[in-house]
Length: 278
Ligand SMILES: [Zn+2]
Image (cartoon, rainbow, N blue to C red; front, top):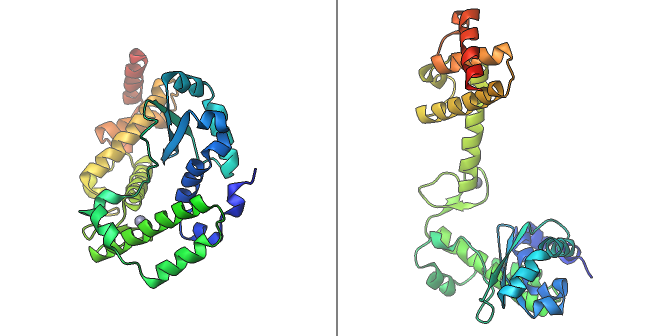
């Protein structure tokens, strides 16, 4: 059996189409991967975030295949050349009228399906599609890939027409009202949260107004960071970690008391509370 990653051209990889290409490979080469017996009774439909959706012609087969799930996942990932599939969901009874599904972030632009069909691609895009598909010998797979690429290019074009712009920190297109794409927004939030947490670790009594002089964040973000850190520390203490500095930090975080105000009496009192809870 030929390993897919070896025959995938660099063009596909460079275009960021490696994943849809691999997703489609699983569907197209399904019978080759699992064998004719299984393929006659189960039909690979789509891949959604690492989960392969398989339609099965009866609940008996669904049960039978569930037993073999791990070994099927193993076969797929060996075929693709890396861990593409983490789980398989078998759905009984959808077999006869099922069709392959493709995923795109298609709901972000109004009337997208109609618009997609009307788009004329740029010459550059058409050329890229031709060059890429030249590397694929499998006729069915070639068609699939061309369709995915066409959709991808068309979608980009439509988004540009709707004034979508490149995310301020990566190449993904985002709607006019957003500066960053969803992934970068989450990433930034995450980073900010940890910056605040790290500051709170050093200055647990700091108040929002003081912190804001150094870190631009909302009060809600500040409270969230504080809550997260407090939860971490109190879990440690509850589990029997009576490190004195941890207990002091807990007191400072929850009361806003400065370090010089935290004495042994307060520490022992807090510790008593934790012990009693336990
Ligand atoms: Zn981004």
